[in-house]
Figure (cartoon, rainbow, N blue to C red):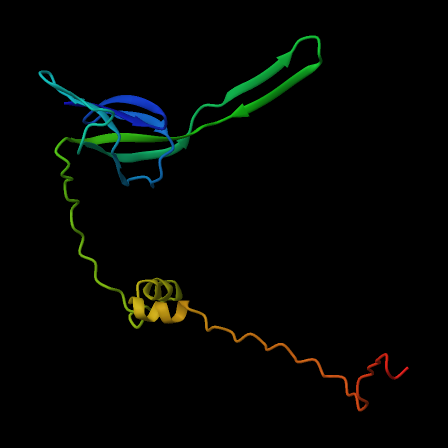
Length: 175
């Protein structure tokens, strides 16, 4: 079985256990990634072409390496103008190994790892204590994470000018 996938603006024809080099995909070495943009799935007898994507199809792959490609030289020149620019470029790439091609939309369950919740009391070293605090229940972290609201200082009232005399009013009759 093979599939045509799209990643990084390019299309790749892949089969199980193929190793491909694609533009950088987030994930550490050894991580499993799912490529959901499947354009075509087929085998010796039948092919399914998507419009534009095949519904419920995905390809799972394991990240073998996060590295950089060979350096390319970018050289620009305009003759008779004394204009020359030389730059180098190395593209970030990811090396993938295709592990499975899924057509029915169901993803194989990863092997379950039994994890016990770590407690801060069990930690003996400061590094383990920090890890245990990070894994602590949400109530404790929420209380610590929310800073207390600071009261805004009230604006000071300006003192009113004391005036003992009544305001001056002039009228035409007094004059």
